[in-house]
Picture 1: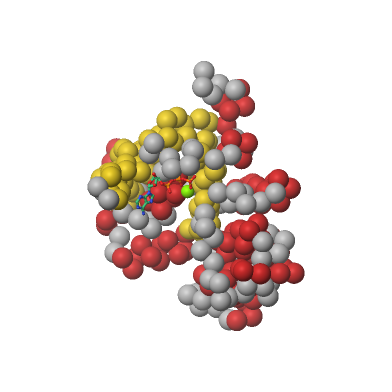
Picture 2 (picture 1 turned 90 degrees about the horizontal axis):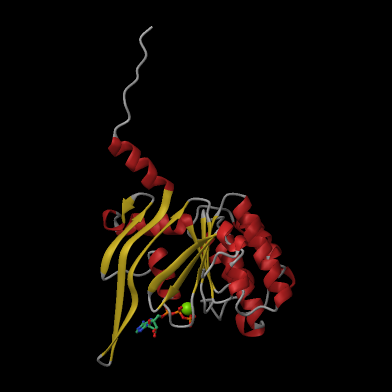
Length: 255
Ligand SMILES: Nc1ncnc2c1ncn2[C@@H]1O[C@H](COP(=O)(O)OP(=O)(O)OP(=O)(O)O)[C@@H](O)[C@H]1O
Ligand SMILES: [Mg+2]
């Protein structure tokens, strides 16, 4: 019997490898100019994030973390460099396609929450579902499930101004979770929480990671960053070092 042993071409292997890397940034630069001052927010940043990975991005204030998150989440465009999402260069996506991929794939937790003040917690969490074909009942079920995950069901009728900073943060997290996105991109998600609540949120991220979600967590807290599989340290818009979990455990950092 003749078997079809068509060789897999190098190009195909390269493509498969590329696909495996959900996110790939090559030499990304982003510069801001304010009143004649030039700030290199991202300076030749090259990183990749694989599907199902749990990565933390750590750096001091102003190091470029949020700028990097906006870049990863395709909310901003680089001045220089290439960005591949699921193996495809970002400029090959049409605007509509990119919006669709982003809505379906990524759950954002913004540093400043980005909650709508006139809406209740429940309505804020419901927002990303309004674009989906779904009955009101189904939406309500998912919203309550997400609010329950962040332990906030009893505050569902409250508007952001009627919630504490930590509670607003949890609403923002619930809003990111409600669509069950493949990747959660969270900017300082524990920044406004007391240590107990912060730990609960971290357990939630670990649970989501165990279920196969990709987690990208931005923080300035070393203890939080150490919980990831890989820790990417940035300073002055540059990647300083990338440390794997094993190296974190072995204390090989900064050696
Ligand atoms: N829209 C903007 N216009 C001008 N400069 C900006 C803009 N956004 C960010 N920057 C500058 O780029 C640099 C990186 O900012 P970024 O918000 O990414 O830092 P960060 O690491 O998230 O800091 P933090 O921990 O305080 O949130 C900073 O020096 C900041 O002042
Ligand atoms: Mg920031």
